[in-house]
Length: 478
Image (cartoon, rainbow, N blue to C red):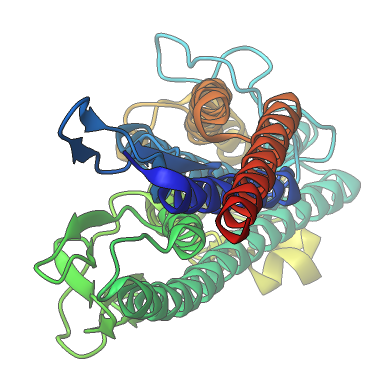
């Protein structure tokens, strides 16, 4: 049998166990509003029994087995993967919205039509590039209606300059958007490197605290999980345990963190033509993020934005080629001939020639020299509005521009839908993790009272045993 002193020891250990339970419950309550915290529980186990010759094995109370974290590692992994997907979608959405803003007009996010053009209303806004393009062809038509009119020639020159100025400005804004996305990529890479250092440091601190101990550094593990999920927002990561019971971390198949050591970091580099991509600093290995904000920014820049810029450049080149081919052989009121209407071949460089801007009489609207009323060239230029241009995929200029804008709208619509869906997934996973790892005020208060009552009962046992010992001592003295 245990005897008085054995019972006293059992009660003292019960006192300690219940005090520890109250401390852990209090720690949980203190972190009730900490989103990175996973609730903890004191694990109790029956202490080793003793052999009694008459009664057999006799219990000796309970011992503290440890403080455990209530986490679902599979759920944490799923949340990390979905966080990476959400980071990519958010960054791509932001980049496409920047591109939309660069157009200076709203974009209909409806589907494109069967002929490749944007759906009706695909481009909206009174002062956008589509309106300026239509006005340019109206200027050609006005000149064809009254080829001897200097005022019509001045109107045409003004409309053409309005169009090229708008096109140049749009190209400049889209170029600035590309620069902004490259800067965002560099900023996010710097955040990745900072987070890698923090994770490696936490790995070291966890190893130090857990070395030679059967316990777990639960709070540091919470913080590390938070950092890993923050990193997943920036890039897709692969996490695996290593031989030292710590974590290794890979990005794009390259190990960047092993235990408490940062083996390599990331940097941006120019892959050619201003295309900023990602590689490791020490190894110089090109890294594909495969998720997170890094991938989303690259996708927005190299897909939606790049396609829009290419579309505008194609429009400018096609317009310059077609208009100049018709215009060059024509004759002006002053006999001018052989001049080009447009200079430049890209959206950034397309401009109205100096002679058109400064001398309306030199505009070459006639097909025959000295025929003041001849409108054949002006009429042919006006008819370009409906011509399907081979270099533009057999589309008219308006159709080609509408398709370029419509493709951007379609891409933005798709990303918007994916972001909405991803938000639902993340909320569901977050709610599921909260139900498992989150702190419940009611549950913790109940546990606190339970441990308090058990503590009081253990203290009462000690008082009773003390009284019994005093009685026994008194009997011996008597």
